[in-house]
Length: 554
Image (cartoon, rainbow, N blue to C red):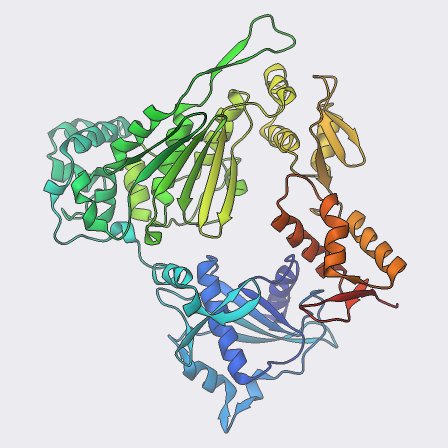
C-alpha cells in the first residue's frame, strides 16, 4: 500500500462526524503497552459487531477536531522489556488476527502511525486472554456485554442452515409443505423443469427449495414448516409472532410455527377498513384500504428472515388505531433503511442466508433489497405517510406503517400531483409533514416546484396546493440542523457570564431543539455541537464529569 493510499484512508476516517466503536484517534502515544493491546482487541471485536471488515487505530490525530498533529510514537522500535513490542503484542492476541501497521508521512512535518485491525470472526479477539470492546468510545471488557459477545460467536455461523440431527420430515406440517410447494410452483412458472415439480415427493421438493439440506432438517425448515409441537428443536431460540391490539379494545394472540402459514393468520387479525380522501379538485372521494396486505406480509416476512434468533425473542406486531408497529431483534445487517428506499441497493450478505434463500424460493421475500422500496411505493400510491424505521435499541429494529394521514395537505398533494412527483420529492414532503429535517438542497428543490413555502428554515406544504397547516419542519445546512444558530447561543451565554456548565448549556438549548426529537436525542445533539466547537471556539477548563466551558482566546 502506497503512502498516498494510506492518506486516502486517513482522509475518509477523518471525515467521520466523530470517533466510533471501530475508529480511534490518538493525539500522541499509547498510554501503555497493555493499553495498546487492549485497544487492538476492542477494535477487532467492535468491527465485527458493526459489520466492518476492519477497524482503525491512528496515532497523530486530534480525537476532537480530527486534525493531523503528528505523533512521536514508533511502534516498530518500541520494546516491552527486552522483547520487540510488535512480537509481544501479537503473542498475546488470540486468535491471531494479523493486524497491519503503517507509517504515514502525511506531509513534510506530520507523521502518523496507523493500525488496520481485522474484525473478529466466530470468536472474540482477546488480549492476555481477556476480550475487550468499545462502547461508544469507551474501552471496557466484553464479558460485561454477553449479547455483544453472542453476536461475535454467531458472526460466521448461519444458524438457520444448521442441521437438527434428531429431527425428520415427520416433524414438519404436511399442509404447510403442500402450500409451500404451490408457492414454489408460482415462483418457478417459467422454468424448463416446471412440469416436473408435481411429480416430486416432499423430500425432493424440500431439498430443491433449499429448505432442507440433503434430506436433513435445518433450523430454517422448523421455522417455516415445522409442526407447532416441534418448536423444542430450535430452543432456546424462539420462532413466534405476537399480535397485540392496543386501541379502544385490548387483545393479543401468539402465533407459532409453521410461520409460513402463520403470517396469513396474523393478517386476518388486523382491522383493515376503508379510508376516504376528499381532494379539493375532485367531486368524488378517493377511497383506499387502510393497509396494503402485501405491505403487511412484506414487513412480517422480513422480520422472520432477518430476526436475530440468538436473542431468543419473538417478533411483535402491535396494532394501534392509526398505525402498525413491527419489532424484531437484530439491527440492520448491512447499511440502513435509507439505503434501500430507492430500490437500487442490493445487500451483499444476510444474517440468515439459508432461511432468506428458502423464503425467496417460496415467494415470501426477495433478496435484491426491494422490500423497503415496495413498501414506500405502496404507501405513496395510497397517499399515506411513508414507513418509518428506527432502532429503539442497538439490537432491535422497529418499523411503523401508517394507516392514517398526518397532514391532509400531503395526501391531497399526492392525489392531485401524483404524476408530477418523483420518489425523492415524496420522501422530502413526508419528512416535512413529520417535522423531520431535510437538507437545504431538498428544500430548494421543493420551493422551486412550489410544493412548499416558508422562511427562516421553517417550511409548510404550499398554499398553492392546499391550505397551510401548522405542521413545520426545519431544514439542515450541510447535514447539520441549524448548528451555527445553536453555537451562537452558547458563545453569547459564555460572553455574558464568563463560562458555561453543561447543565447551563442544556437548559439554554433543549427547548430550542425540534419537538420531534426525544430528550436523549437532544442531549446527544448538544454533545456533538460542543465537540465541534471544542478547541476552535471554546475549551473545557473543568473536568469530563463537571465541564466548564470558556471561550478560546485567539
